[in-house]
Image 1 (cartoon, rainbow, N blue to C red):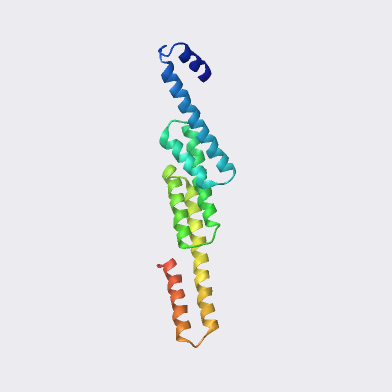
Image 2: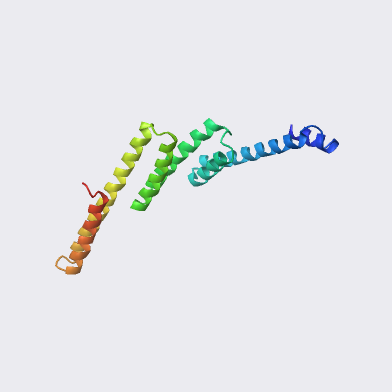
Length: 168
């Protein structure tokens, strides 16, 4: 269709709304290209790129493949949050993953599986951090058990462990 419209435009540029039709088709094909890049990134599990592309599509034209795009973006948010949690476990990582779980929940606030995944992920990261801090405190004491510096260092690690779940 785009080729035909371009031929008509060459023949008579003022013919009906040929210019507008060309612009609309070009815009549509551009959106399709972005969607294909997002899909390729998702298949490659490059979640950041996939999310960026899906979000760009949603921002550019909220009606473009709306249901399909929502499903893909929702899954990309969840997948990226899980990917982040599978990396080295830190509070910063947890916060980034939390942001992506929150984005997914903003799309589907009543989705119980997302709420549960978020809760499990938070608990797992917290458990790992507490364990890491406790091991570091123990190691500090093993190296120099009667040293005030070692005691102070161990105390800092115990404090960090207590701050992971302050009400626990």
